[in-house]
Length: 108
Image (cartoon, rainbow, N blue to C red; front, side, top):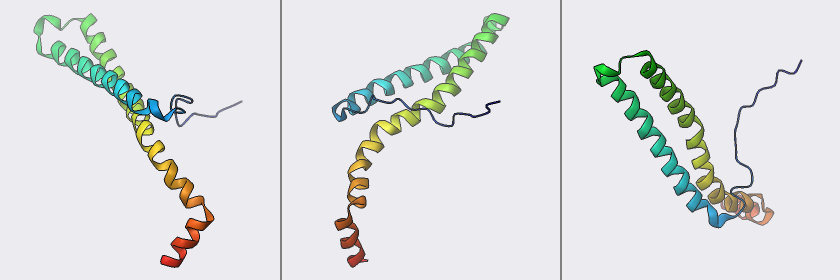
C-alpha cells in the first residue's frame, strides 16, 4: 500500500520566462487579496447581521473560512517563488563556480 504524501506544491513552467515573473506576481497577488477580502467580508457580515444567522449562511461562513485558510497556505509560497528563486539563481550559480569559491576562500 502506497502511503506517500505530498509536502510541497509548485507550478512548473510558469517561471521559466523571467520576464513574466513580475506580471504573474502582480496578477496572483491581486487574486489573493481579492480572495482574502471577500472571504473576510462574508464571514464578518454573516457574524454581524442577525438576519443571516441561518444554516445556509453558517455553511457559507465555514466554506469561506476553509477557502481563506487554503489560499493563505498555498498562495504566499507561490508568490515567494515568483520573486525569490529568480533573484537567488545568479547567486547560487556564482557560488557553485570554482573560481568564485577560490576567491571567497582567499578572502575569508
